[in-house]
Length: 263
Image 1 (spheres, rainbow, N blue to C red):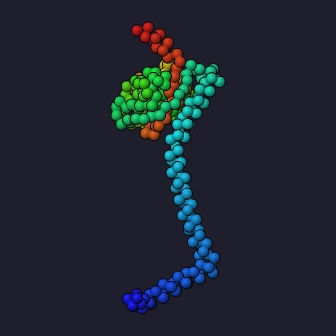
Image 2: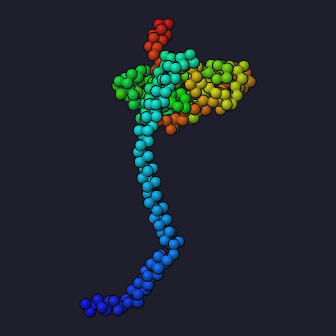
Image 3: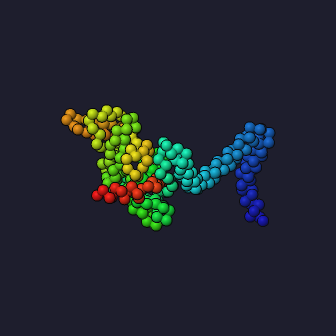
């Protein structure tokens, strides 16, 4: 007990100072509205910030299911458009959604893998697109997954046309930049301008006509050249590709059999 009294006496000045500080703080708090509101405001801000972070975290984890639902809805809407307007859109095409589970963008022979296969009715040779435009063509099909050759693969050739005049060319990739491809077989007499829109031609059974592909970035025609050298900026951003749609031509097998019969 004596030791406690000694300690209290030794630090009595400090303890009195602390007590006065607490008393002063309480007097200011109860007699001045501004500090009191500031304290409440700070506390409320902290709680609001915490709630905002929790909400954003919940939203982040729900994005996956939301994106998958949107992909399904887009495919359904496209099918409805086809059924309602078979004059403008070839009614033989149907759409189904898929998710990209693996992809490369920095190789000569890039590929992407989707989570749909033969169990889902996927067939080799189907076109693949997304909301931006053409993506590629299904190459191999397994029971649950399929491999797609994208436009950014040097083995992929896609028949395209100019939206402004229906002139046809062949889209190819040079293996350099996944944002661009080259449009070949465009004769020198053709007038090509930056900004010209390029779409699918509809001359192959893979895609219906009119699916966006890209816009002309620039065109070079040297003296004596028979064809333009055309650089096309692709609409599809392959670096951010997550969900795609499979373009199913219901007459694909029949068309392939007819074409194979010519060989």
